[in-house]
Image (cartoon, rainbow, N blue to C red; front, side, top):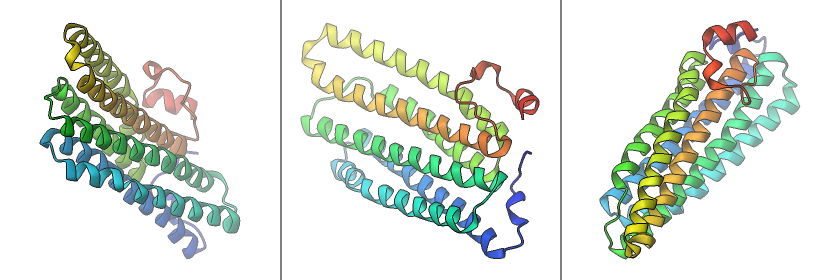
Length: 242
């Protein structure tokens, strides 16, 4: 059975309702934090702000602590409530989603560390236009995936899933361009490698946003689409399968 945002307000136990809503709220808070971490890491790079980059890198432990807290809340709900059907899917989806958000926090930290390397080297780096463009793309994917989770919106979730291929194409194009530049100028190898690591981290953020969107579809439809061809997925297909 499909679920909607109202489904989880129909339990006999008001406390159970509150526990489920708190899980969603805490997940959204964690999502907002990692989105900010990614944004600030890129801002630090583009502005040459090593202090901000260091702040992002050192703030990774806050994301880790939030994951542990939410996981503990999920464990207590599973133990006390023994939820079934859509409620169980919600708890499992939250557990999976926090793992991906924690990894996005790790990627933000990697971006920040490479940004510090570039800033300290004082060398202008190629590829910053591509970094800006891809970062805007994956941050929108992340924001939309979190919105889809909050609203149980499978249509928006599917849009995020379809966007992942576009990010992969942009990433591949940027990497080929940077490889060519390195071959033409050996002096640029160090800075360009740092930019490549940043681009790789952003591509991984897109992958994790894609995962979050897939969890929304699992939560609402009870359907695992991880190994399905995105080209064959639309709302009608989900209705037929759901």
